[in-house]
Image 1 (cartoon, rainbow, N blue to C red):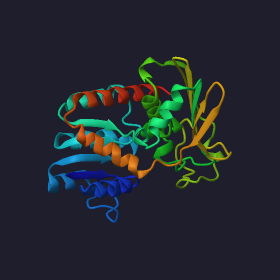
Image 2: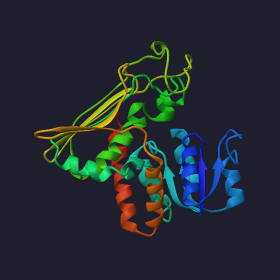
Image 3: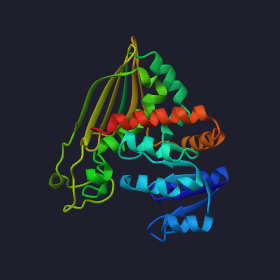
Image 4: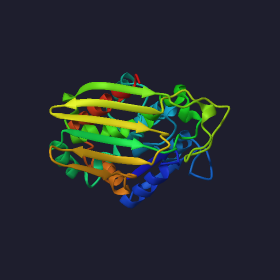
Length: 292
């Protein structure tokens, strides 16, 4: 099988995983030292068709690349947060009915996910938390420009948390209790970051704190994310039950989850129900974040 990886940041992880599966991997990045080609057009001209494509580029480029590559690809994986709106995602899928599309939801394929489901079923409250001490991604870059990233922490971290919600409960029956997305910091207040570099002359107009609160049956779900809390990092999922509580540290998603996600998509290439389920989740996730 032949796979195309576009964008060699997180794309390097995909390259390693795909090679472990046994796929031939073709890479694209603007930096010629990082990839086989510097444009998607060049890769398409040489290789023609792809079994899987993995779009790992800045948010504002996702749609353009997806349209560029869709007609010659069987499965197109688009890194979170997908595209700008749920309507845009729906139109993309409609315009290329033979191609399968999936927003990356790697955390759904973690080995401990079934145990999490069992705990969620017993819980009165489930708390999915991703609070960073000081990890605003490259303040002043495209990451913090709403016209390019579509949002801040709500587009960066919240999609991961919504992915958990979708697979741990029946998301279709949940009721939104409250939504909060705020910009706490100004660019001139940010003097350091653990991710990237600061461009003091750039743009910073996105939310950096976000919380979504749902009620689903008898369970309350609280999803909260913070780029810069200035407190200890906390990436966890907590289950508050009647007589006990469990908190599981999450950390970075293991490579085996990425591998399982890709392999299941390939195995289900001709399973229409599988892709209808993926589409429903992807539309719902877009709807939760598009107006924050």
